[in-house]
Image 1: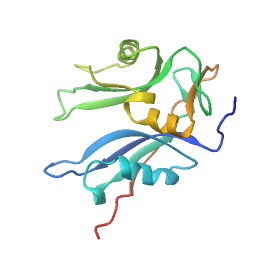
Image 2 (image 1 turned 60 degrees about the vertical axis):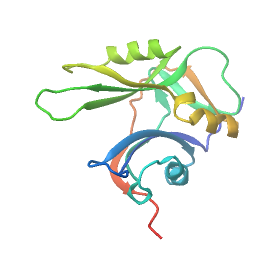
Image 3 (image 1 turned 120 degrees about the vertical axis):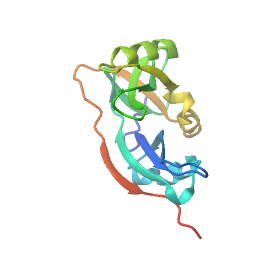
Length: 177
């Protein structure tokens, strides 16, 4: 079993504009590369909005999630749970917006992932499931992994390693010709 040590799995919070929208749109994407810069072309290909508006707001390497070490390998992991991305929405009566919490959880299915994620949310007036996605299938990571011989492996870990990320505006959109 070979660990693909040079390649990293990144979770990226992208933003930009789309035709007809009045406020900036955001999405979470998953990409694989040796660095975040090596993932820019993949992120551009995934962007559905105005090409020149695409930018990064936050990104981080996923190497630990929900009590598990996360590794990329060249063969599938047999059985067990999967890595899930859960985007929860909720409200604060003092803010004119919907609030979001993005979580990575390890679960056997979407129902378990939702329950596990909702149990981690505190102090929200009206939490609800906004979107539950399995990283391997629902965000095109599965197609990238299978097509490139890369698979997520989850190993229970002893030490907790919170998701470390960088948050800053980095424009990566295509320039108008």
